[in-house]
Image (tube, rainbow, N blue to C red):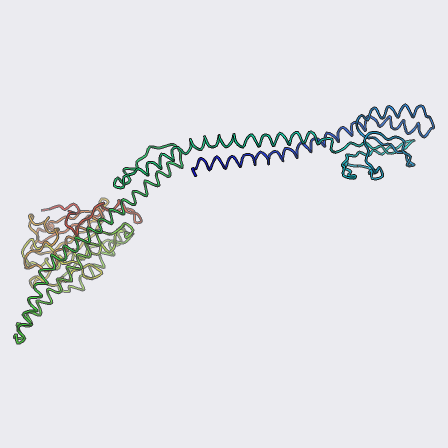
Amino acid sequence: MRLSTRIALSVTVLVPLLVLAAGLLVLGLVGRDLRHQQDTRLQDRASLVRPDVRALLTADQGGRPRVEQSQHRKVLADSLDAGIRVVAADGTVVLTGGPQPADPARLPAVTPSGPATLRDKGHAWRVLAVPLDGQAPGTLWLLTPASATDPELAAVRRRVLLVALVTAPVSGLLAYALADRATASLRRLSRRAHELDPGAGAAGFATEPTRVAEVDELASSIAGLLARYEEQAGRTAQALDTARSFSSAASHELRTPLMSMRTNLDVLAAHPDLPAEDRAEVTADLRSEHARLLDLLTALRALAQGDLVELTAFGPLDLAELTDAVAGETARRSPEAVLTTELPAELRFFGWEAGLRILLANLLNNAVVHGRSAGPPAGTADTTGPTDSAGAGAGAGTGGAEATARITVRLRAEGGFAVLTVDDGGPGISPGEREKVFARFHRRSGSPGSGLGLTLVAQQAALHRGSVTVGTPPDGVGCRFEVRLPLSAADAPPVQLPARRDWLSGQERGPKVQQRP
């Protein structure tokens, strides 16, 4: 049933009921007013006939028949259509006329508060008793039937019923017309929703304001629902792409270490009498390839988490405290490195703690591995992915010469940004290689790790709407990584997450990557 029809039927039923309820109230008020008018007339007539009734009682007591008859006629004439009864003090009925109750003995001796109602054999009377004193005492009663007002009440009742009968169809038609006009915009909205192309999304549901608050609110709610559905569908599609990318990247990158492990296992199986020195070398190679597999899978998982993270995972944190914690973990894991920190007492930040921990751990691990003055060739600036809760790589303490890695970590607030710098004393990165180090699986020959460590750094900087800079420390020796993250209120994010995140598939090119001399 249409909404306009429901409204019309409801009004058709409701309006007559309201009219009848109002009519009942009016009937009660009219009845009270009519009774008041009756009482007023009785009191007025009592005042009019009282002198004549006194004269009548005096003539009756003095034995003057002619005067009595004259007063008798005069009192009856003045009483008009009201019933009248006059009784002397000794109980003698001196005068009676007009409508009377069947049992006069039930008449009240006095009505102190005005006329009263007397019921006698199914009839109701309004009675006014007036005691008379003086030389000839007695009592005067004036009476009128209470039903005298019934014709007027019946007329009011008929008019109320007539109005109720007339208003039922009229109000129903008017309500239908008004409701049909009022719901026209709702019907247009319904047709718009029905004709919506599923591929158009929220943009295809744009509607003009109707200036009807409820309809505009409903249109806004539908548009919001479509936007959320579209966003969720996009996130679902992105999750599927991420899963496919994960599978593709894993199968491609795992092939080489798996084949190497298979070869080593075949060597061990084919030569059970292999010398101990050669067997130890093959076993060490197996452990190395196994560690590389674990690092690769862990880094791929971290990239996938970054691609799928939601804003609800972000929260307020102390970036200085987090940096200090990750630096401490790195120092314990790589005791051969000399790590110095220059941190503020507190730096409030709104971010994803797990992601920032990955960023910090991989930057420090990169410095540990490649920050040795006699380390690998310049340009080998990548590290392994995270293997623990801090996100540090498994190869932190390998892959370099015996020289000590000297690392300095600084954190400060500058111009609305949190600025993190990690300096090392290694060979540095040549300008031509500085942008390539953030690419997936970029790894120079002989460099340990999965080739995803700095990709994770770039991903986390992008998620936090920041930038990463590769350059040289002020003394001109080594390599400097500088990350700038925008600060905001400690309890609210400055902006939304990037709409598209494809680090795992390699289509995302990440934050602003700059080169500094």
